Length: 108
Image 1: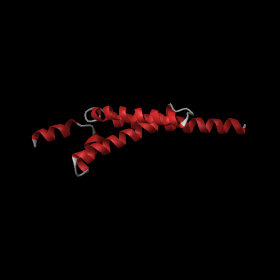
Image 2 (image 1 turned 90 degrees about the vertical axis):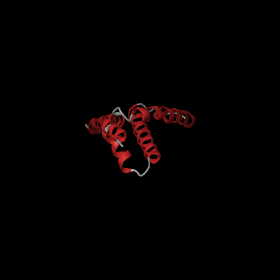
Image 3 (image 1 turned 45 degrees about the horizontal axis):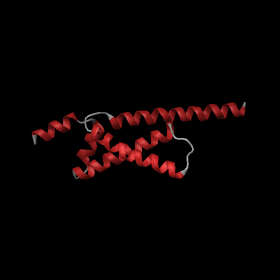
Image 4 (image 1 turned 45 degrees about the vertical axis):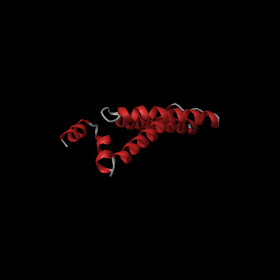
């Protein structure tokens, strides 16, 4: 029990929240993986995605799925989820600002 508490104390907040609230460790691991994949896909889409063929998009997202597995292992003791959230927020703000600038320059 002491070892379990030590691990929880060293986890970053979002990973700890997922593991403390979900009923089983297996379900929590899959939930953390899903959160990381969705945030990674959002960051990719907002910051790096270009118009590609469907087959190329499928390959990219498959590699993203595989890469997120490694990020999930790192997310226990590193701020992976928190960093992805911040990256997504910055890219969302950038896209909003870009949209507003395009709209104002088109109307002028």
